[in-house]
Length: 250
View 1 (tube, one colour):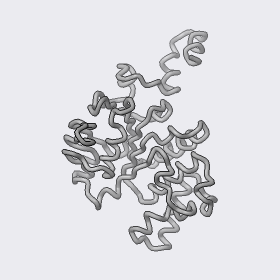
View 2: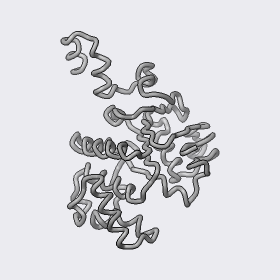
View 3: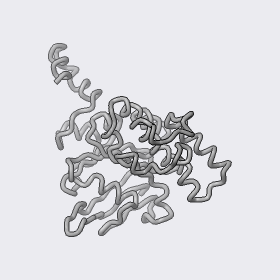
View 4: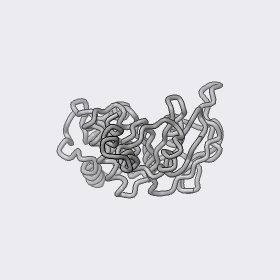
């Protein structure tokens, strides 16, 4: 197993939030995690990243149980980027994790330059993170994870707090990460966040109710999630032009 979990459960007090979850994720997959509010999406990502410890079951990375050493290879992107931005400048924020593991200064500079270039923040190295736009802050949060060279990136509704411009900035970064072969799981309610996923996992009250191809998820109408724009166009192409326009403008 490259990454996933077996018989995973989690409780807040007596409330069982996740129930016997089993997931197997292959290297390079881009997966959408969906479900209504309270379904357990955020909790699942936090347990799989090592932020929370499971009540029972195990999280696995490369056939080994997740521990303090290999959890560094699992990157977690918060819904609110301000929850993980701690540097006085953009450059210092990206450098924080590298400093903690003792990366030499010369190598650190090289890694920071690469990470900021990847998320299109070159030129803002000395900017105060508090002056950045919402989209820039989220891209900075992604850069601070990328610089640690994770093999899995877990994103918890990374565009939900952004305006359309900010969301487009994040989509462009995600597409670049896909091209780089990154393994990504994104929890989201936003149809556009799911545009390029190939597999969807749906949660309901802590249970997995679907795990399979995106097309099958939408064709079976597993839960009420609006179709991504390109998927909606394909679905409506067989309609007459006037009805197509009417459907897309609803």
